[in-house]
Length: 130
Image (cartoon, rainbow, N blue to C red; front, side, top):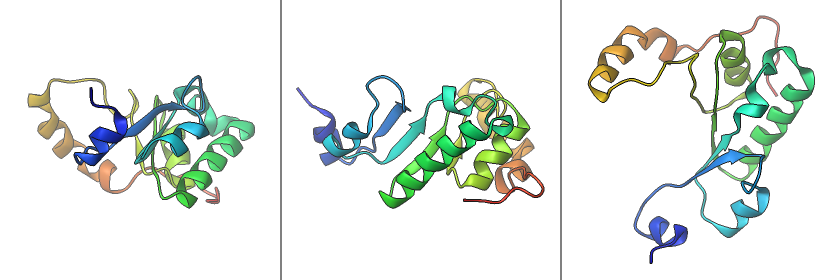
């Protein structure tokens, strides 16, 4: 049977899903060759209005940067959350605030319609990055 490190040896990229909750812990980063941390939605919810959540996300992003890991925030539902994550340096976001699940055939049309947002994420005025 092929394990995670075996998949990496074949050239697959590995994300650590739900980072910060349950089994997706810091020790998982040491055990496996991880390419990207997926920050759990529980950290993202209302982060644009909760300084404690902002500090937690900032700490996760700093750790990921120092370990040369990409980051993806799950469950982004508002422009404020998206803007905060972009300004804190999160590499990627996903969630209903970006786009609802859609058939593959509709993806290119969606990307063309939202190209400006993809190239220039929203910003929060007066907010400093980490």
